[in-house]
Image (tube, rainbow, N blue to C red; front, side, top):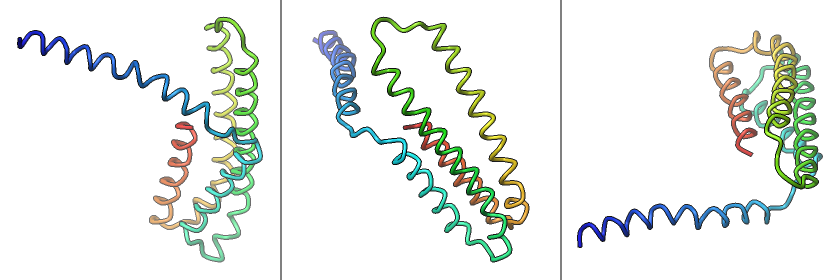
Length: 152
């Protein structure tokens, strides 16, 4: 009896995630697809939230525009990449070429690394003008945005 109960419990634990998988995929496909402009607008809104959270002084405000422009450029590039990837997936038929996917992923990472370097260069004057509390907030907001983007 005990052995049967254990086997049934194990089978249920294995079967539940398998049954839930298609529902998760179906939920993703039901979501409205955002346009490149909408994705970029969301990035701009997050950047604006960062500015509000930092509570910049008038002197620090002078350094904001370069950072904001770099963030906007980075958001637009990200949106364009996301749309291109979506279109590529929609047109794909047949098996995925794993080697080609590795190359594309490496190229995308190189491009994103270049974007981050440009952002760091643009952020340097602003960051240097921030106090310790603002620096901490800046880093939290910047990397939270990056984690949120990676999750989507």
